[in-house]
Image (cartoon, rainbow, N blue to C red; front, side, top):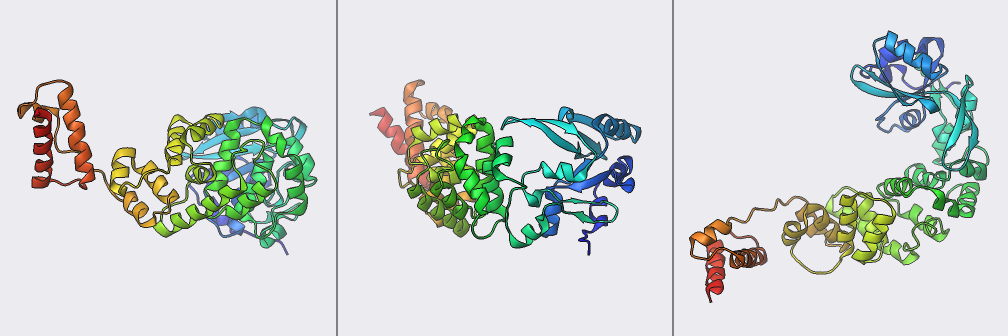
Length: 397
């Protein structure tokens, strides 16, 4: 008996019916593919719906333009066109087979064979497709059974699949962290362990993207433990040692206790030594953005016992929450996440009006007032006026 998904559910998405009609879905030329089918079968929310088609890219564009649907050739050399139908983007890719690969990129040729296209995908659970008209699910490699078993498995020989694209090593563990249960597939783990050094050939941006996605899942600790034990991360991040796993587990518990959403960058900070300079260096190695680099370095400084409000005021909310969670200060982290820093209710002009001479003394006095105001818990009214009066008196001595 054929496995069926609800064919009407996705057709009702904005612009989808027009798109399917234009691409010959009724004639079997186009299907839903990949993650959307997988997630629907698992009763997970489906965000993006991707399409695969027997039509070659130029024909896809011609049909879209004829239907007055905007066509953007986002990856046309590899068969991908983005259609903007009624304002909503959908990715459409022509069926392909690999001609050659070098571990980072592939040269492809187009095909009309659905199974041949599915065979070039990484894992069985990602090789599913569905007919938009009938909802029938096509499964060429046992992906449905693997979904039921929560088992992530390469299609074919894992070593060959990793040789085609080295990033599949990290992707394997990311998908295991999200969908897997129990121990990883034996052949997959052996292949990833054997070829871990292949990760060194990849761009650091791709590595960082995969790793941060993996770490952001609700509880990736078990998967990270396997990666550390099998030396998966050692070629690219030797600083992540087995003893760091304890900090990751403690952070996950703190996030859950504080009701704060998980965050891949914060989780990475937990896996690194408490050394801001080292964290900055690693962020640079991973080609993280300037904002992410500064945040990682800030989180790596575990020193000090300031109040949560003081940390938010001095460091900003993100870094303050990171530090408090990494220090297992759960209640303080929850407070910091919801606290809005006030603006100090005095400026340099008011100090000059009260008799201080323009120049460095005003700046120094403002800093003194600010520090005392923070230490006192951000008072206003008479309490703040007392701080200002004392600081002005000190400056005049």
